[in-house]
Every structure is written in C-alpha cells, then in structure tokens.
Image (cartoon, rainbow over all chains, first blue to last red; front, side, top):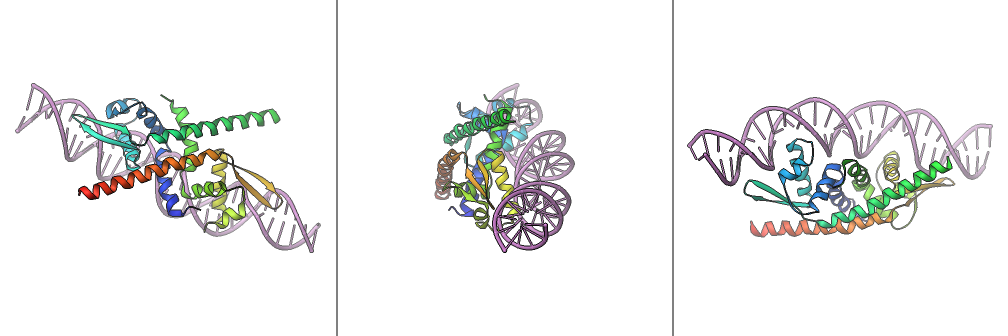
Length: 106
Length: 106
DNA sequence: TGGGAAGTTGGTATTTTTACCAACGAAGCA
DNA sequence: TGCTTCGTTGGTAAAAATACCAACTTCCCA
C-alpha cells in the first residue's frame, strides 16, 4: 500500500486538475503553447482568476511559463495528463450506461 | 475546445480522486474487492468519514458496492483510474528533477 | 423477537477553494 | 522619463470540502 504522504503528494497533482477551468486550460494548451491573453479571452472570468488557476497548474508542475516581450507564454509541461481524459471519458460513458439501465429497470 | 459543461463533468470525476484517503482506497481496491471494515481499519479515521469518502468515489462511478451478509463489499469499478498514477509519478519525478536543477543553479 | 454488529445519514465546526476588486510591478514605447 | 499595456499579488466574501459525534437503519443470530 502507498503511504499517506505519498498519497498526499499525488493528490496535490490530481487536485490541480480537479477544476473545470483548469481542465479547459490544459485542453487548450494541449494544442500548443499560448499567451496569457489568449487563454484569458477564452473565459468570462477576471484575469486575476485565470492567473491564479495558471499558478495552481504551474505549482503542480503541469504547465510552465516564460516571458516573451509583453506576453507571458504558457506551455503544457506534462502532456501525459491528457491521458487522464481517456479514462475519465470511459467512466462517464459507463455511468451513462448504468443510468440507462436503471431507467429501463424502473 | 471542450465546453465548460463537459469540463465540469470531467472535473467531477477527477475531483473524486483528488484526496489522499480516496487515492489510498483506490490503491487498496486495485488489489481486489474489500469489505468496508477492512478499508476502514486501514485508516485512523471515523468510520463515517470513510463511509463518506466511499460515497464520493461511488457517486463518481469509480467504485461500486454490494451487500454480502453483514458486510458491505467495495470494488473498483473503473480500474483505468490507476493509469493516472503513471503520469502523476512522471510529473512528480519531473518536479524533483527541476528542483534539483534550481538547487544546482542557486 | 430482542440484541448487537456494521454502515449510513444528519448536523455542525473548521478548513480550503474560488472569484472578484483594487493595487502593484514589469516591460516596451512615445 | 512618463504612459500604457500586461499580468500578478493582496484582501475579502462566499461556497465547497472535510472530519467528528450522535442517531438511525439494516441485517444476522440467539
């Protein structure tokens, strides 16, 4: 069994992905690096909110950033996180199947 | 790009895994189904706390449960979630490497 | 059928997360 | 150098997550 400390470290990474906005940012960056302004304009949220979401992803080691003139460029540091999506999609589809089953039964 | 609603559904699944205790439970169940009492005895936490963690995992569709006499048996419904661990481990190792790099520089 | 064991649910206090606004720091340009 | 644009940081209020205790339900067995 993994230790609580090990689990805590792992959960901190997973926690960074556990927010819809941050998931969308990861999806966006999966298509290539993007300047902050472009990420920000994708959402109807305050820029400080987006900046903090990016900080969470950065501190988890999922994205990295670098300055380029006026812009701040963000890049996906761990593209493997998109592997998560395959399993998540499978779980969602399984859940839907199960719900349909319940509807048939009831 | 994925929609906010799609991202919300996905993040709900990921959120269910974003807790050290729940990660440990998944790791435990990855070695085979287990009765509640055995899961519970792994932690120094109130049984109601464990029960609620299991409910979170169940509502996400990650585990399932069934009654067997006095026991409640829990089982991993979506074993693919353990795939997450490979990427998470990679991210952690990458983070450590980066830290060491900083230490060398400084 | 009464008692006990096994889990779940309700209630609540504490902590964490999230989003906004406002103010600040950094970098290029007039 | 002053201006402006870009993004971050600080502060705060609201919402969500977490853990405990206590009470309840269910199911087996005497």
